[in-house]
Each structure stands twice: as structure tokens, then as C-alpha cells.
Length: 375
Image (cartoon, rainbow, N blue to C red):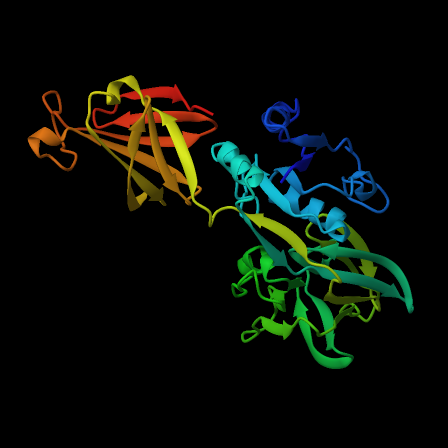
């Protein structure tokens, strides 16, 4: 990639510190980097005006979290430019790159070492008395729920013009395979491979014992009609697109949901090995063997051999997560950490948690030291 466009969630990077660091890093290497200057919603977009994105952009970097990436996907889907999410928030399932893997990821983008995944999107059109009143797209899901007080609402569901069933529930989620790991999963729905082309209907807290999610082919057209209240009056509801855009609905309104004309293009680097360089702390330089351990859920999952080059520990990995360094002196034959008094141990054990550009070093003596990561 040669030309980049940056979309930043100002709540996650208010002073544009990370954004400017990325721009400088790319421009110092001869690349073009443009910044999105939108900060408010428009009538036809969420936060990014697609008309302001140059047609020759190779990739869009989205800084924020999954919510920011979902909004950007809806705004620029018609441009068919690949998106890479950089997680600056708390949820980063779609935005898989974080501050600690940012620069290796940029290097891979500039070297064209990445893959692109096509993610299906949904288009939802809301009709009232036969007239279109709202329309939007969603990468994760479209959710139709009640509005106001806690109560079950009746939803009448149709597929390809034929009546399917009725749910008395808090709501209904229509999700893509990408969205199957989001709200739908929390409501008891299954996980679907994100590369699939399917639609998933999951009821929210249905008033029944045997209701399950239903999977439909991507070519089907799903309609959900908001039913009347229990006394036969007008019920109030709400349609949400990726949890952001919301459209009020009432009894008799229908939302027609189908596969969108275009897919969202997502850049994937997690399946590409990255070369990581970490400055070797002073208290580890006296050892002669170094190994990297991949840590997941507090457990060591994989061990990788590491080399030392000019004062840096160097290793290759495709895990975008936490790592640890095991440093040993092999002369005494000790191969694992020991417990108890460690004052005379030739072996030293450290686990380094990479977070926010800082390594936190924990020794078996529970001493703690922080050292910076070389970018």
C-alpha cells in the first residue's frame, strides 16, 4: 500500500497523538497519509463523508474500537477500499491491531504482506403504510426491539414473502456471520465463520421454552413486522443498525432485511508472521538463552525461540496478544523456574506483558520494572 486514509475516533485519541504518530511513520517512509476531518454525523453518513475520501486510496486505517470500525464500514462500503481496525479502546474483536503491534502491522501493509477478507453486510429498509421511511446498512446486525417499559412484544416474521412465525420477545436480532459473535452470541445464538454468506435470526428473551436461532441463505429476504400491543393498541419499537443508527417503529411497520449489494473489505494481518524487536532489559543481558512464550488467558500456549541482535530480542510470530520472555543460563542445566528463595539462582524468569507501548517485567522475586519498547 502506498496511500492511506485515517479515520479516528476523537474520544479515543482526543489530541490525535496516535494518529499523528502513524501519519509521521508512514510519511517518513515515503507514503501518502490523509486524515479524515469529519467529527459530526451527516444526513447520509455516520462520521465519515465518503465523498471526501480520494478514489486512489489503497487502505483506510480506522483508529478507535469495534464500534468505530462498524461505523466506518457503513460509510465507505461503496468505495470498496480495504479497512484495517486499530484498537484504542476496550473491545477489539474486529479491530485486531493494538498499540503494541501497530508498527509491525504498518510495515506489513507497506510491503503488501496481508490478506483481504470479504465480510457480508445487511441492508435494512423500513416501510410505514407501504412507504419507505428509512434505510441503512449494517456489518454486524440489525436489531428490532421494544421502546419504553419492560414488556414482551409480538414480532411477525416473513421469509421471501411467506409467513414464517411469530415471536413474543424483547426483540429480534438479524445478524451477519461477522455479527454472530456479537449481540446474537450474547442472546444464545451460534457462531458462524465470518467468511460465510448467511443470515442469522436470533430472538431476544423469547417467551417460550423451545425457540432457537434460525440460519437463512444470504439470498433470502427477511421481513419483520411489529405487532400490536396486548390490548390491541399501537406498540412502539425501535430498529438499530449496528447499535448506532436507530429508527422508531410502531405497530404495522415492516423492516425488510436482505444482503447488501457490496461486502466490507477487511485487512487481515493476524495470519501473517510479524518480526518483533524488543529492547533487551539490562537485568536480562547476562543470560545466554532466550525463549518467547505466547500467553492466552493466563496460560502459556506456545514457546518460540528468540535471537539477540544488537541488544534486541528478535522473534517472529502471528499472535497479536501477550508474550513472555524466559531467560536462562544454560551452564547449570536448569530449564525451569524455581520457587522459594531465589537469591543464589543462576536461572532468572520474567514475564513481560506488552501494554500501551510499555513492557512490565515481573521476576520470581515479585520485583517490577518498566522499560520502553523500541518502535
